[in-house]
Amino acid sequence: MSERGYEVIPGDLAEALQAFLTSPPEGIPEDMIEAFSDAVRTGRCMLPPRLFFEAVEQSSVAISITDLKANILYANPAFGRVTGYAPEDVIGSNESILSDKTTPDIVYETLWGRLRQQKPWSGVLVNRRKDGTRYLADITIAPVVDAAGKTTHYLGMHRDVTAVHRLEQEVRNQKRLIESVVDVAPVVIALLDDLGHVVLSNQAYQRLAGDLRDREPAAVLLSALKASMGEAFIKGRECGRGFVDHEIRFDPELSGEPRCFACSGTWFQERNGNADNFFESREECYLLLVAKEITEFKRQQEEIRMNALRALLAEQELVQGLREALAGAAYKMQEPVNLIAAAASMQARRGSAGDDLDSMHGVLKQALDTGRQALEILRASMPGELDEPVSSVNLNQLLRDVLAISTHRMLAAGMVVDWRPEEHLRALPGRQGRLRGMFKQLIDNAMDAMDAPGWSRRELCVATKTEDGSITVIIEDSGPGIPDALRLKVFEPFFTTKGATGGRAGMGLPMVQDVVNQHAGTIEIDAETHDGCRIIIRLPLAGGSETGRMATDQNMSL
Ligand code: FAD
Image 1 (spheres, rainbow, N blue to C red):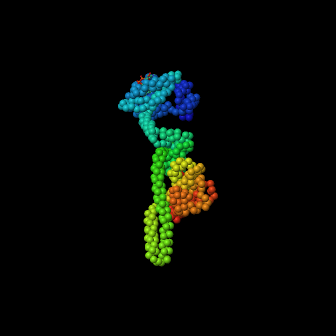
Image 2: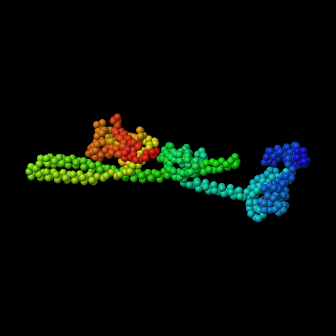
Image 3: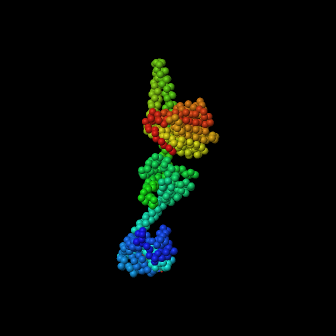
């Protein structure tokens, strides 16, 4: 032992180390070379040589040392555990005893080629144990070079990596399987990281990206989802609660119809696999977003809804027309009945003055009774108004529907519509059917006014806005307008400016007035507008006496 407890390196070993240091094999770490250099320079070895032997013996890696023909001279206990061969079974045998004979020749040629160059070789070989079972050997073979720079032995170190390889392969296979299933799925699938970046996507996603040109589909879908789900999206992310079939709609920027998707999302945490986070586990949050396009389905649904609405409005108009006709007939009949009643009462006041007058009185009374009976029958046969329940009505949606129903006529007549809805209009409590009928009546009136022969300016503007606790709807047309003198008269029953051929019996605006009153609103024909007709309707958001029972705090945006 030396003064500091170290072994003094024997002279021949020092020489061997010196030779080793002049051309160290590739892959030897710098610090190890430095330690060796230091040992050679100072002539002191840091560790006793026996320790090296014990370390090799006790290593969990299968270690063997061979001659230049790969005949085994030494094998450690781990070699026995991995290969099944006890050291005495293999000493003197060639390493090829381990070969399964399925490793391609080119692998061995490369291995030996490297060894000839005095360089180590690492790779994977298919080996066979003593019991005939195969395993995968992750092996490093290195030449042992003497002081003269001559290879004297080979050193082999390997471990069984069959299980690791099987796991890797299984993961790879599963990944490939999942990727191919995801890729051909007819729905848009994207895996997004915490920042919304796309980590994985499928072909349907790529197709959507093509449709959206330079907009990232994930960003478009996420922003529509956040807008539509609001707080629920953030809360769901916080507690890892996903969402299922949440419908969203967005407008492609350049052109094209709005597109609708049913989106489902699953949040999951993934453990970070970096060495930095081995002991301090850090989880990263991902969102698996699946979006199924339902644009066509929605279009068909909308078409069915519009057809049903058209049928409903046509029926409502028919009933309304019938009511107007019967009310008109009753109104016209009331006049002669009143005259007969007056004549009869005059006759009665004069008293009996002969048979002729008595019989005249009888005739008048009979005519009066018949007239009154006829009036009763007319009034009784008038279809009553349906008792429609109060519900939450989105006027933007309602007006949009009415305009959509009238589109065909407007296009045919070359009318231009300027639709200006307030972006986020609150819903108001009301009777949806009556309100729809009322707006249809007003828009029909506007179209009738502009459709006059020779009238060239055909522009209709419909706007909604919220003012002083009410929703104001403005319907403005560029027709001939309503003269000042008739601004109030047009709301009287049976008054019409359309003449006998005008269709309706002048009950349209009274019906409108009636619906406005039911909703505790107001209607006016703007006195300042002389270039066309501008109708302003104000409907309170709190509802009128009839509609006040409804909750009004619902926010419906379009
Ligand atoms: P072989 O006829 O032995 O050789 C196949 C190819 O290798 C031929 O192209 C031949 O040119 C070349 N080759 C063979 N021997 C030499 C040589 N001495 N010098 C130059 N080229 C040569 N093989 C395994 O399959 N599993 C192991 O775990 C394994 N461990 C090894 C450990 C050490 C330390 C060494 C040195 C070699 C090891 N080998 C191992 C390689 C083994 O020696 C054989 O080369 C290999 O198994 C192929 O054997 P073979 O009988 O099929 O063909």
